[in-house]
Image 1: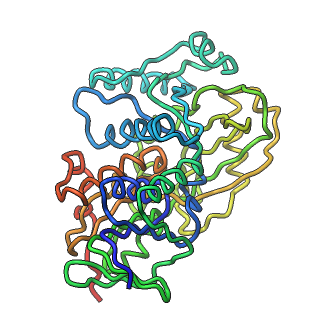
Image 2 (image 1 turned 30 degrees about the vertical axis):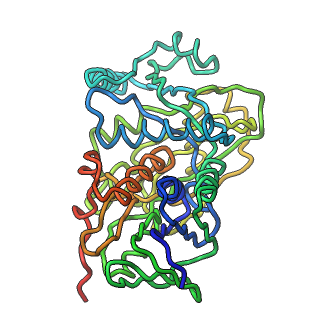
Length: 399
């Protein structure tokens, strides 16, 4: 039996960044991933990162968004990994007067909290991003947003972890979990590991691990999907999104009583359009947006791709002339209240959880990894984690 201080289950952005911070703190770490590093949602997203600033009183959201932005920046600049990081800023398209009024309220509130965000006229926005549609109502701009390559970033975190002594074990599906004293025995087929602390960072599959522990961890998989064009010369310089879904979700947080918040569909019925995208360093233009509650079904809906491409063309008209060359999808971990679950699991000794980051798992993942690693190392939670306490949602399963 191999012994470790901490075993991290899950080789996505949260697990890999947590393993890095734990290893840098001198912990003996084993990261277990059932497939390959960044093989699921952490490698399938748009690569958007950042927030609106730290503000006057940083809370959980700021520590996750801005904290992650700083970590991505450090990974490239200080640690020397080419993850295609750029602090590019973001532009959010405002399509209607109703959306404009909501954007004004939103920007006014964010500025009162000390955030850096503003509304630009179409002419002002085109000075930042020349190919934008000048016929829209305006654009919300933030300089504290950026982008990075999801696969390169996630794998870079795992490489830094290994450089600091961590073991990374791939093709290692967890088949058994057993508490042993105050520690844990973790099985992966014929492999057996022992650890003092166990961190679960398994994204959309967290409920399956919960069942192994006799716990109902109410994380639901939500399908997102994306599309790409052929490589082009530089045409898009910021991350691009739309105010349409944000305004809708502000007034309609959930589509029905059984769903997590901020979905694009109520069962088979589309209720709003969602949009985000950018141009990658290789020249591909990539966009996505749908959020559907379909269990573990991750088949691409080409109807949804067409809706999303039309939406993107309303913001960047040149996209109407381009063909979709590839599509893909991934499963995102959504919680019932829309907040992540990061912290200690009270039902067991030395069991920790970091999941439920919804559609922004990549952009908030390193901040989550840092906070949960800090909790494991110091034994004391950062005040920001009060908002993400797993005990608010986890229940024991009674047979």
